Image (cartoon, rainbow, N blue to C red; front, top):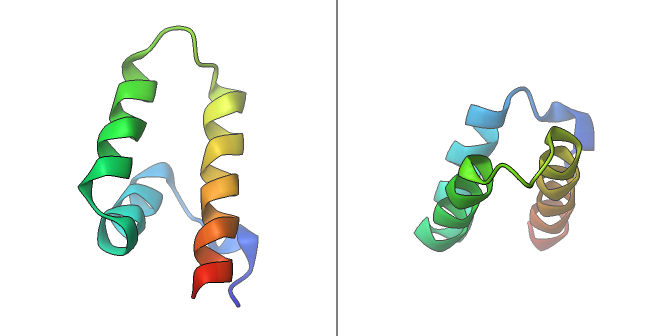
Length: 58
């Protein structure tokens, strides 16, 4: 299992997500980024949650 802190940047995360989970999740992330209601903290928590999910699936 990978460590959580190996996530280097949001772009790297998006590339990994695209490879692992497909286009649907990437499109959802892009929608979230363009939404003014989602804060940076919420995006980080979503990214970490997805990272944990990906780690447990591996």
